Length: 430
Image 1 (cartoon, one colour):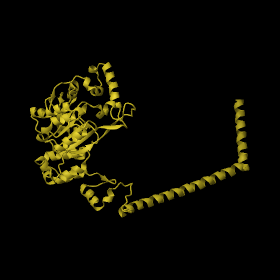
Image 2 (spheres, rainbow, N blue to C red):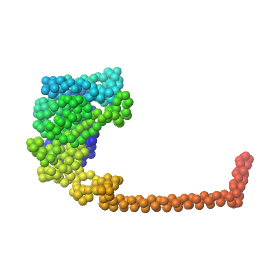
Image 3 (cartoon, rainbow, N blue to C red):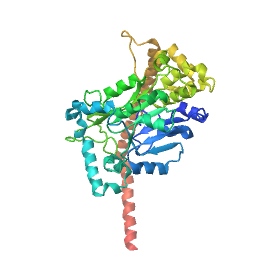
Image 4 (tube, one colour):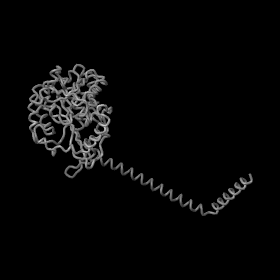
């Protein structure tokens, strides 16, 4: 996953101290082909969940290699019945029939995938053993034709707690989200990660960012992370970013991953959600903030609920684990924040000199003046050394030149020549 911290110190601290032993982190991964991302494995034995994918053989493969008994793989489509109001509205939305709003079909990625699909078909797609190729050409694989909404699934399985939903279905993610609508609150979902495109029609049912964002806000989830992927046109293919026919180094931004989470430190949180987060949910939300590279939000959450968290852990230890280095120094959380209050200028990039009203702030100016003076002294010392070496070299060259002009040098060369002639004579005699 992009924009992900694969060394989340707070998450590790919470897991190592068994703070989730009685409340495992529960993940739902829609579009789980190739496996659950390694980031979720950081929860270790405290991870539970369900992976969904319509590819029957891929789900069988994942089940056969899965070592965590709490993770299950289900070969099904996630979505809505055809008679659902959302599906009826989408069927009647004429704006989605225009290719103008769908430039991805003209991308070099699609052209490459089509070539790879042709090769797989030549090998008989059903027998293709390359897992990644088989996944990219998943529509040609053996698929489970059943479809179930996430709402119906969690109810049928008696699932009462879900912490995070990830969905990546290549174009049907808004439908997946609508199928989970009631479960977001009923199961206490803390966040959702969705892959969607920047394009798509202006219709209310289009699988595009503007509709995804409206859905999330309607359910109290705010944007905390995003990435964008460029795709070149097939008319002038750009270099692929990875060794696979996906995004390219240049081209039109078309797709992206977006992470939405609850704002657990907002003063009016209860007014939006109707209640407060439980202590296990607070710990899990702090883990998610840490995992998705917003440690500042994790610190805010811990401070906001410090008294409650103190019932099960030491909040200061969590804050210290979140604290980054400052100009090469590792401070504890208290000293780090005090440094900001004392001199926020120390948080400026060390290689940039800011100006205020045309003047360099005195704290920064002093630091840079000291560094500049040291640099000048070092350059002067180096210049002196070069000058001395140059003089020594010049003197040596002059002395060598005079030596070669001397009678002694000429006699020495004559003796060497005579020695060489005698040696050659002895060699011929032998």
